[in-house]
Image (cartoon, rainbow, N blue to C red):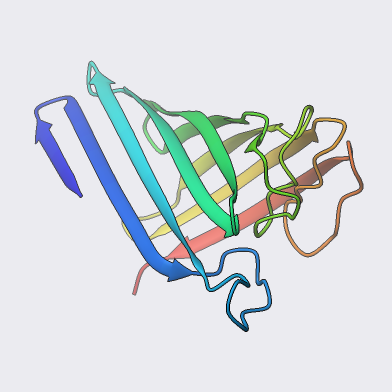
Length: 178
């Protein structure tokens, strides 16, 4: 991983690889059966702070998984993040994330990702307002919404989602630094 920061500009990149990894929790066994595959991820990010008031960052990430002998899946996504200081103790935070359709020839799902195919992506967005009460305490309130494509089942947490389902959460955060 590497990053560069100079004034209002931020750039970052990372690469990760796991060898003999079993991302789809397949049975590992006798000769000729799946013995564990490899996975890799690379991520690029960039950001810029405008007039020391609005901070905008974006990223692109792609992961590839060997899930069975001769089968793989590819997960790609991008996101935008904004942080706007309105003046005084007031701040607005927003984000948008897009997961593209899962690609590949795997016949099993990998972690939270669906089996590769059409309509397996999702979109998520959040909007939060924060109020700084003191140097160490901040209170935030916000909303997050997840929209799955027809064959995706991603969720915002413990509550499972059905294929094509949507989820929404409201949040209240009290952050205190000791």
